Image (cartoon, rainbow, N blue to C red):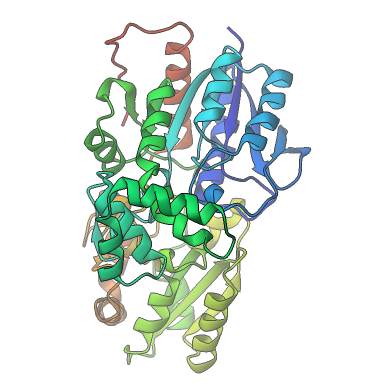
Length: 452
């Protein structure tokens, strides 16, 4: 069997990236020790190839037309054709998908199988199965993840700005009415948006098609595993393999050393400027905090479409010198930068699958102040190695910030309780075992056991 593995994330370095791409970059490096040669293929507006961290990266071109259906995951035939050319060149034994989009669809799986490759899929973000993209029912509470036409159409339309009552009415329309609207919308650019309910409703079948076609699925946290089970995915086809981080940095400075110099409780946010990630929640909560011995630094990852949210944070910072916006930190400098802070804030409004930022903070020996939600709540032990706060609740975050500033001794105690997180070396061992198990078709009822 070939030792070649082709990893397919949503995007890749040097573009603006997220936790999935950081994960892939680290996994590729660790897999070398298990005898696997990795390549990366990622969709892009134009085809290109280059070397990143000694790994060949091939960007395959997608459909350049602004087609509504592509935004809803309908397979991109042009991307699939270009991906086929990548497979023909590399001839990998394993194609490891790390995203689900129009460019990374069930067509890609079919093409991979036709080339003789086995296909692994890792569920990294809620966008894999959630039409709204957050796994938050109507943006308010965690969803069980069951994909149903009525609920998902209403929730996704509401997420696109449609009032809930109207969204729920549309969701109750029969399939024939939605299909008719889609046909009408397809005939007119002006009316194209009326196709969206039909496209949302059809996502369930596309998701199930993809899950049925891949050879194995990796869930990176417990809630993801539960969502897959809820939607009828057989447990024997799944592996729970939690995310990990690269080798931890040297021991961080004494817990109170930086604070003794500045006299302030120092908190940092690392990540995208995006409402789902919640950096604006920190700014809003800070307005109601009277304590002056607090400083919040936002290391902003700016992506296309985030200018308005970023400008709003700049406006907050101009009015409150306790809030500072800083440039994003290079991936290999994140943990060292984190170690200079008392807390790392993770105020997400969606169900995180890790997130990696929690693991990176723990690797740096720093406790978390995070939303009591999804993967954050799976990793953080409230009052032990972090503080869990009610999600999307500015008053609760204000109270948590005030309490932390008034009891810095408790923060030092939590820092002492932080334990090293799971490593990417452990993740790579799981993946190497999984790849090896796929070298020949497994028995129909075969079960895989890996470290969780």
